[in-house]
Amino acid sequence: MPETLIQMIKESSEKFSDLPALKIKEGESFKPITYKQLYEIIKNLGTALIDIGVGKNDHVGLISDNRYEWIICDLAIIGTGACDVPRGSDSTPQELEYILNHAEVETCFVEDKRQLEKIYSISENLPKLKQLIVIDEEKEIDKSQYKLMKIYTMKELIKKGKKLMDEGDNRFEEASARVKREDLATIIYTSGTTGNPKGVMLSHGNIMHNVLNSPKAIPITKGDRFLSILPAWHSFERTVEYVLLYVGASNAYSKPAAQVLMQDLAIEKPHYIASVPRIWEALYNAIHYKISRESLIKRSIFHFFVNTGIKYKKNWLLMKNLVPRFSRVTISKRIGELFKSTLVVVFLKPLVKIGDKLVYSKIREKTGGQLKAGISGGGALQKHVDDFFAGINLSVLEGYGLTETSPIVAVRTFERPVPYTVGPLLDEVQVKIVNEEGRELPPGEKGIIMVKGPLVMMGYYKDPEATRKVLSPDGWLNTGDLGRMTIYGELQITGRAKDTIVLLGGENIEPLPLEHALLQSRFIAQVMVVGQDKKTLGALIVPNFEALKEWADETNISYSSIEELLEKTETRALYRSEIKNYISPKFGFRAVEYISNFKLLPKKFEVGKELTHTLKIRRNYVQELYKDLIDSMYR
Image (tube, one colour):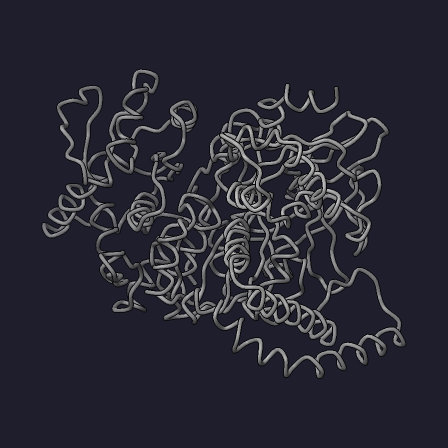
């Protein structure tokens, strides 16, 4: 088995030489790059990198969004014995200045001319940065304008490397053969919710743990087709791409924009999609919005069969004992469950078959019709979204991990698709749940999730204090997440330790379940629950503006701007009603969890501001940004 990433791609290029590895959109079709071609390009680029001075233990920047060249640059960099420092192209100049200086980057790939100019504009603050390599040459670049640095294009370096190799230059193969399992492969700077990002150091061995063990959990295999929509620099998407290259699957590059994605799904007909929960939420909302525009008869048929499918699936899972179990059930109770669930399954099965022809199959067809599963990571999947896709027989396998764990710790499997959990642990991974004093808790009890195994990071770059705070001397990583284990070994995520809201009365409130409940409303697009050191909870709500405008038109409410509409008495009454509907005892919420105050925001949360690059809310940043607005709720 390969021990390093560069050894992995070399072996795959020999094993799957003529199979498609990457697919690039050209017009209305995807053009393949074979495994053999891919490795040749990597060797060419890697040889040129060595020739311009990149070597063992160097740190090379990689500032780019999702595109096929990303993985080529990545593997060429780490094949030289260097490590890469990736970041998305929506990073601000201030973020890049901090990261490139902190990581002591001397050579940096940039996606295009815009990124070139962004970094060059701060070049006087980047004393170590000597050379930039432009990936995309769509816009002509006049190198004479950039006198402070050496400028290359990726294309010219590949050409240079090929010429050197044709002349017998074997430095890249020699360098890659010297790369060891324990060598640093990448420093990924976490988006963070407070302060400067921390540089997570991952070795080849850390990442290879995920590469070798993920296919045991989800049987991705030779010839499977993936559609890529997440940022390649993020650890989840990146590791998924490595897994594909290890098993002989292919990856077609798309975008999360609805029109582009839906078209590419129809063209490529993927077997899998790796995504964040927001993608599935958006698909759920889009389906329900479209249905809301149909006739009463069509709406009724849709909702009847979807609800039937959900009920059938829940009872099927109960019949198979594939439900979250946090304590043992008695034999008599289990016999009762089995009897009742079997009756429901038998009774509903004919209706589900009809529902599949009329409703479910039509929705699945929108994903290309051959999707084996969606793999969801980077955040918790909402229960109503989880139920919906299970009910229409479209598998969404939810996983859990962190950048610090390379990243996958656990993932739901086809064999044990236990809902509302992130499934069993990957092989060689240990998890324990502890209380605030560090005492290990039994299955069923909620506490802090601790992880140990070969997937755990080497530490934070140049930050031993931050490393000591989360990583114990014996290798246990404090994830900062809250969760519990089922009696059968599945992990359930229940919240984030540092997100816990403490009210004036001393009550501890987890905001995530409340936010997930509110997001079931078709009138709410984004929400953050607040209330630290307050008597009651409040919420910052970003409306679903399309649904809100449609409601306003239907109820004959006149307005000249979104801001005016949000201030209308009728609008506030609508949202007060939605909050009371979803945060109620029927959903299991306590009186202390009721939301008594809210503010409607006129614009969406944005990546790089209110949201991290993985679409998680930067709670501390939002608290500070909207401090006056939050305070006004309680006056």
